[in-house]
Amino acid sequence: MHETLERWSTRRAFILAVTGAAVGLGNIWRFPYITGENGGAAFLVLYVAFVLLLGLPVMMAEIMIGRAGRRSPMQSLGHLAARSGASRHWRWLGLFGAATVFCILSFYSVVSGWSIEFLVAAINGDFRGASAADIGAGFDAFLADPARLTFNHSLFLAMTLLVVAAGVAKGLERLNNLLMPLLYLLLVLLAGYAATTEGFGVALGWLFLPDFSALTPLVVMHAMGHAFFTLAVGACALMAYGAYMPDHQSLPRAVGAVAVLDVAVALLAGIAIFSVVFSQGLDPGEGPGLMFVTLPIAFAELPWGALWLSVFFLLLLLATWTSSINLAEPMVATLQGWGLRRGLATAVVGVAVWSLGMLSVFSFSSLAETRVLFGMNPFELVSTIPPEVFLPLGGLLIAIFAAWVMPEEAARYALDVGPGGFRLWRGVVRWVAIPLTLVVLVAGLS
Ligand code: PHE
Figure 1 (cartoon, rainbow, N blue to C red):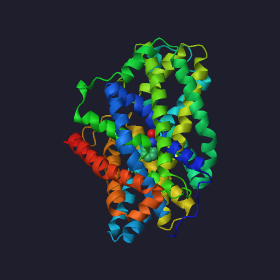
Figure 2: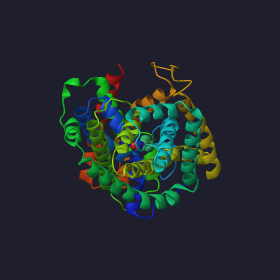
Figure 3: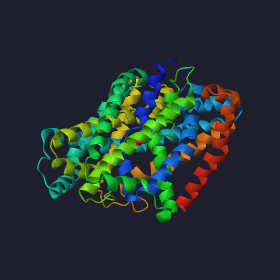
Figure 4: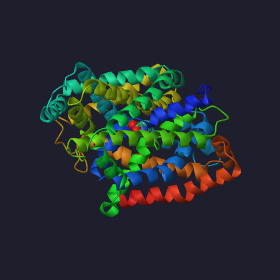
C-alpha cells in the first residue's frame, strides 16, 4: 500500500481527534474505580508521574512512527524498519497492537453499553426517589440480564463502526468538532456542582494528600498501565491517527495539549464522583460498578437530579464513542492494508469484537465464576491484562523502535522539533521511559 493521502484538515482537528481517543471510559469510569481500589492520592501521584515520564515521550514516539510511515501501523513499521536496514519483523508489533485493541474494545463496548442503558433510565427518571439499596439492586439485576447487556453492547458497537466505516478523518472530524468542547463544558459544570456538596473537602483530601506507605509493586504497575490506557498509548492506535497528521505541526506541542486535556478530565470526574461518594458515605473501593451505582444514588436525592444524571451519561457516552472509534481503527487499517475494502474490513472487525464481547456480557451471569486465568473471569481478564500488560509491552517496543531502530532523520522530521528538542526526547525515551517500563513490568509481574 502506498502512502495515505488522507489528512486531518486542521491542526485543531488532529488535537481533537487524539483527545477524543484519549478521553473515555479510562478517565470517567476506570480512573475513579481503580484509584478507589488503590487507595487514592498516592496512586494519583504515580499515575500523573507515569503520564509525564512515560506516557508523553512514548505517545510522541508512537504518533511519530505513524506520521513518518503514513501507512497502516503494520506497514509503517515494516517500511521504516526496511529503510534503516532493520528486520521487517518489526511489523508484527502492529499486529500485536491490533490484538491488544481487539481485547480492549470487546469489554469497552460492553461497558459503554451500560451508559446507554443508564442514559435512557436517567431520562425516564427511573432513579427518582429510589433508595441506595434499590439502585444497587437494580444495577445488579441489569448486569445479571445478558439480553439487556447484549442489546446495549450491539448498539454501541454499531454506532462505533458506522463512523469507522465512513473513514476516520472525515467521520471523526465532524463528530469531534462538536463533541469535545461540549464535554468539557459539561464536566466543569458537574465539578462545580460537586463543590457545593458536603463531601467535597474530604474528596479533595483523599485525592490529593498522598500516603505512600501502602504502595506495592503491583499498585505501581496498575498506575503505569492506567497511564498508558488513558492516553491510548501502546496499541499502535495513535500510530494509525499519526498517519493522517498534517505536515508542519509540532508533535510535542500537540501531545502536551492532549495530555493536559486528558488528565484534566480524569481529575474533574474524580472530584465529582468522590465528592458524591463521601457525601453519601459510600465505599470508594466499590469496583467497576463505582460510577454506575454511586452517581444515581446521589443524584436521586438532588433537585434536577434526573437532568444532571442524564447529562452525565450523555457525556460519558460521547467520550467513549470517540475512544472506541480509535480502538477500532488499527484493526480496520490492518485489514485494509491486507487488501480488504474499508466497509468489509469494518464488518469483519465488528463480528469479531462483538463475539469476544459476548464473553464479557456473560461474565456478569453464567460465566461469573469461570476462572479463565489468574483466578479471573473473562471480563476481569480482558479488562486487566491488555491495559496493564499488553499496552506497556507495546509501548516499550514502540519506544525501542523509535529511539534505537528508526532512521534518525526520519524521526526528527516527523517529530517536527529542533536538534536540541530531538536529543532531549530521545534521551528521555532511551534512558528513562524504556528502563522504567521494564522495571515496573518485571516487578509488578513477579
Ligand atoms: N484512552 C481510552 C480511554 O481512556 C482507551 C483507549 C486505550 C483508547 C487504548 C485507544 C487505545 O477510555
